[in-house]
Image (spheres, rainbow, N blue to C red):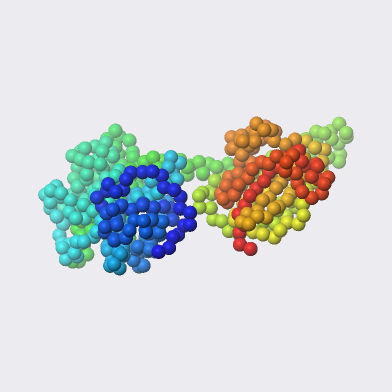
Length: 507
């Protein structure tokens, strides 16, 4: 067996799976097995110590591995619990068909912690599938299929339902009724009772998803919609179900499934979508309207620079400085909004580091002709694991080194140091440096900049570098002077020194 991840994250302490009466396993984000219980070992015949750390796909029949990977990824991303039928292979090489449910555990910030998987055998022979049971049978107790569902979702705080599609009768357990504030009797036992509670906008989506599943276009059906609670409010729920009995002509007779309370999750998603839309609208205003007007203002100020007397020269200089700063902020605003799309799974690829640095240095030399940008030694030709926004890291640090510099001639020194698996880029300046009181919080998004500004540029730097799996820190200028020309080392020794460490990419 092989592992997918060399360094799986430590699984937080949780309930003892050995207490569960049915096979249970815990998976990490890559699908590696973190824990199994005794029932899992007894059913498949593998030793728990042997399987721990192995990719679960090794125990799935090859024909089902790709499907499990796809469904598992969907469940992780959508925060859903789904019944899934899989064929496993036991220690004797025999096929074992199981019904599995997956419940995702997340931390307070909504990040993945681990996946809880529970399964039972699918053992009922095909010839036993016939007409739907009567309502009396439903009240007497769960059939094998319902019992598997009940065991699979137990502890996941979901409601189970069973629908006799011939008699149009629906059995719902108490968890489902309580989710909306009703008793099972108040919920009713017909499809019409569900229709009177579901929001009209969601009913059509549900019916379309169900129709696709009945036509056997999907393995199971799923739909998110709102239902009216007993208090009159609307609550978001996710329904997932599967037809488990058909007649000889393929007409569906009975289906079972679950309801999952996703109200908080859904409302947070909708709120985030609204904020993203608002940010995009603001971004358009900042990037186009404000930036265009400021470019015009900057151009006319440059025209005035040669036409004013000594009294107005300082005023024009201040206008040029302020307009250039505002134009720079429009770039930072754009980059910041783009960075909001970065998550734990940033799409990283080899980026030429020396090319990115040289391009940004050339741009800043043109923007700040009165500043001096120095490269210590030759920049080695290497790639780092990053994305197209790496240039934003260097641009913000180079601009920061000039904009917050009180020297008559700002001097910015760039150097690189290669290590076994990483590279360090040092950007030092001859400005006033960073006060000790700000060093621990300078990268915070709520922190004021060095001159009282927003400081969002440095927050963006930290966010991007962290997304690359790297590190950015402030070094002591007195103990970390730039190497190279002695005069430049002396000039920059007391200023701000930023060190960025990135992982090397393919060479």
